[in-house]
Image (cartoon, rainbow, N blue to C red; front, top):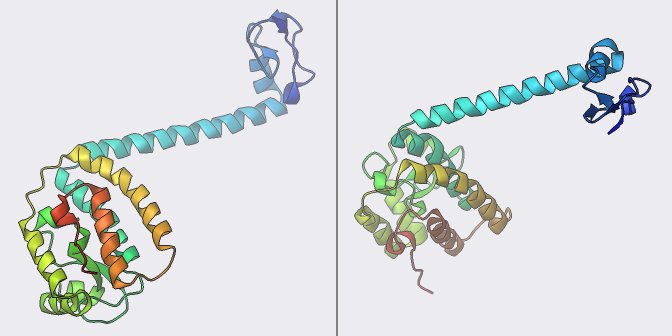
Length: 234
């Protein structure tokens, strides 16, 4: 028990009675704290600040709740296409940063282009060996530019890597659940942070681009090792 005696902003205010519950030194029993809030300039300023903060917190909670409801209503396919795929594509662009288009050898606005498209080979849509940096024009306006893509892989990475990529078609169907992908969505933030620190802003040579794809595939935990890792010949 202490006297109701204002402190800090409420200094000089209070009834002086012995009380147990206090805020800014003012009691609730005799409504000193409430009176101070509504009857003094300092109290009104404090009340206004806390009201604004409470409204912001409420809006934040409402946004989180709305986001959760939207995710709950999302189909597995929607989670993959809108939440996972953009993050995977970003990892590819980080690894291949500074490299020319895999199909044309040109520079410009760059995408992450699939060797086997997600529509027909959804089981490997997130395999980083199936995705390489590709110009927007080649990827979109030329429908993936398949023949030049193949030639680009052979020219840069060699025939054995192309054979490995073609073998990815044998990857078993994706049996992972929506919950798995929601957890992966969070995990991808940590993978991106690790990848950026690993690269440290440096352009990567051919060997490192393959090595990093191997490592990211393992971290994703989506595929068996035979479809995740290309063993380079030293």
